[in-house]
Length: 244
Image (cartoon, rainbow, N blue to C red; front, side, top):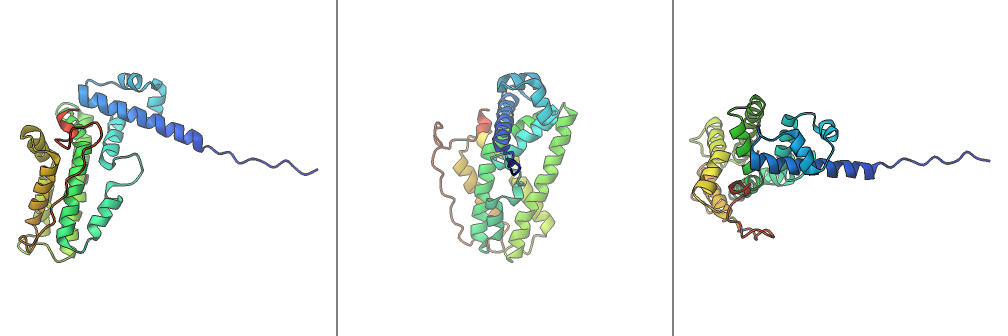
């Protein structure tokens, strides 16, 4: 009699359950951080809101700072896939454009979508950084990453020969960093009431000033269809509730 065939253990269902639990905690944390602020929100209240045992939350994230970092990462990318923002398909496609006008329009759309997802939580982080050392350290790290990531917009434009020769790459990078700042986005969309489409058009026009021939026609960003349950694209979640 032959030996019994050993079955291969399939833990895919278990992994899916763990991922779903992790996302539930992240969504609860994002909601509570946005509604109540980072300092006032405890891991205990997040665990309760997510209906996840407290030891499980600690095992998954370890600390409140790590949980905030996870909230930011999923907001930046739009999902929990372990893909760096700069390596996501839309970013790679925009950098690969050979036509500078199309490239500028693509980066404007990326900036708009990034801010739609991230503006509120980036504001929470910036506010918390004024009094919380952990938040301040995380904010500084994100700003460094944002500057590095947005420098690649300039590098891509320069590679096509489209960058204004009167600008050096360092100055151009600083201009992009300022234009795509969460603070500027909040001023325009929250304080001044711009909708997301208007913000996107402004980003496209502003990025065009970096070009060798800024008067060249740039395709206007198309308006996005309203999301279900939301009245149009009047403004990002920052009014309610954030690395190119």
